[in-house]
Amino acid sequence: MADVLSQQEIDALLSALSTGELQASDVQERDEKVKVYDFRRAMRYSKEQLRSIARIHENFSRLLASYLSTQLRQVVQIEIDLVDQVSYHEFISSVPSKTILNIFDVKPVDGKIAMEINPQVAYAVIERLLGGQGDPSERDGSLTEIETVLIQKVFARGFEMYDEAWKSLENMRVKWYGIETNPQFIQLASPNDTVIIIVFHTKIGEAAGRMTLCLPHLVVEPVLPKLSSHQMLSSMGKKSTPQQDKIKQNLDSVRVPVVAELGRAHLPVSELLNLQVGDVMCIETGKIQVKVGQLTRFLGNPGTKKGRYAVQIDQVIYTEGDDLLNE
Image 1: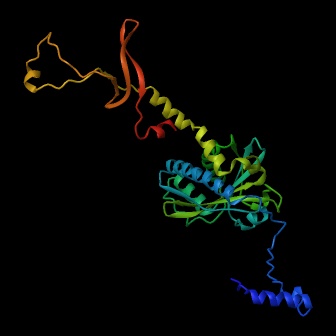
Image 2 (image 1 turned 30 degrees about the vertical axis):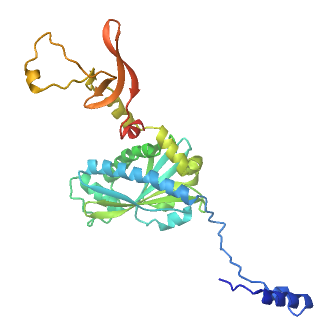
Image 3 (image 1 turned 90 degrees about the vertical axis):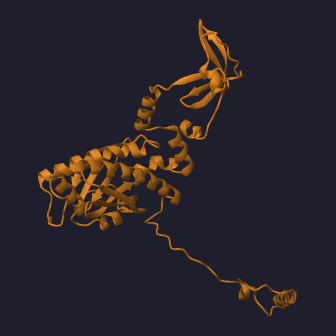
């Protein structure tokens, strides 16, 4: 923190400046901070947008892990290690020469995304599908035609849930396009274009490896305005998933007991045991309590409708947790 000058020091400084004994350039602080900016690697995405991308793919990682666990009959753990923006050239350079790249076509933007699968993960999947223990340590070669078809089918079906992860924001349709083992043979974007990479740490039994998803700017650009936290929360609140709709549909058909309690009376046990047909009891009258199950949810007045006893609802009684049900 700079020292504070006294009034005497300020007067002396002004006097020296006015007489020419001291030049203004001599007292100017030169604390220039230069920030390096690479125009070939423009940062197109804010931290908030990257966090939104991370939340979307956390949901996808859970769906994919559940799917693979079912297919392989083994516990599969998938967690996000990194979400970052790099140039497409940097992504291709980071991909090992021996790997497996699944290419997916994305509609309606007419673009493509790539999922790079570490061979340790791919071989563990193949070993489990072919009845093995999922140990990829003995594998060190390219995929056979049968193994390529197996990987294609597993991840083509697995990425059907990718649409579900994006559904709250965008109606994205992803379809398996092709598979490649040499990253130099695919061109999703120009070398200097910015892409988003999502790195998944994947564990299948004792085998562990990484899967990296590459999203070119062409695919992400249409949804950029929707990637703010406010937009995401409002969109997620308005739209429901097919699973939620199915649960709601099933709940709507569930029958629950509804009882209208006209009043209450307090009697000694002796009088209760001596009640006979035709006896009259005095009850405490007031609003009729309408119970759903064991809970009083409505208050109303007695009446008739089309020759039947009825209750006119005057008040709804809310309890703790009703707000969550309404959401």
